[in-house]
Length: 218
Ligand code: GRF
Image 1 (cartoon, helix red, strand yellow):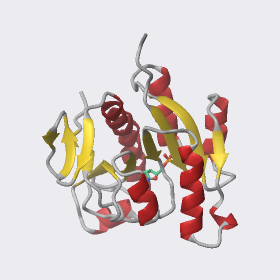
Image 2 (tube, rainbow, N blue to C red):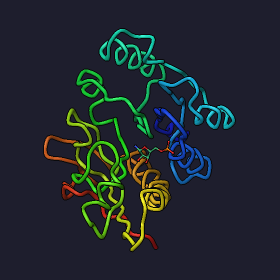
Image 3 (cartoon, helix red, strand yellow):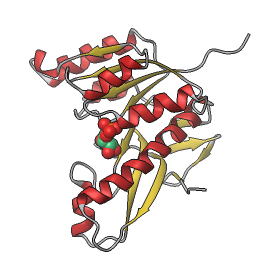
Image 4 (tube, rainbow, N blue to C red):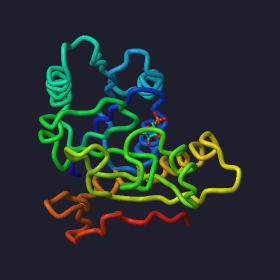
């Protein structure tokens, strides 16, 4: 009998193109995990329609139904726990999570961020990279810790910045790369090759550099 695949829960707030990349990687066998549920804090998130069309269970936990962040996160964690996830994947989930939530899912909570962290945590990453005159930007998959966009990196994918790049043109190229590096990182997790310890991210038991694995396209 084959061992069961890791159970994956994805959290979104909007379009869900990263979620879609993960769904298609899982269906093609490039990610050896079962996407057991997709959660959104927004009932009208477009990604919910995509997930349902793929036959995946969807759940809405609307943050507006809760008086504060703590009670929202507690309810969200409770509902997620109902799916017994091995990994919780933030894919454009636009809510800052409480320490209690992050601690609860320690070592099994990942995020993708559209910059080469530690550069540009938070919002408007592409505009900030343009204003700074950077020649390179990219995306980072990282384990989530209590520091916003600050957890140890798993994979970084660089994207060269071109003369005349706008926030929009950069966002498109970075997003296309995100769709490659997130499935890549999730697959490493599913294969049992990644772990988070107090020093950082381990790959096959070896500590990765703070920037994680450098993703290069072949
Ligand atoms: C991505 O750029 C991701 O890095 C950021 O939010 C965006 C989500 O896009 N955290 P999508 O919903 O996956 O299309």
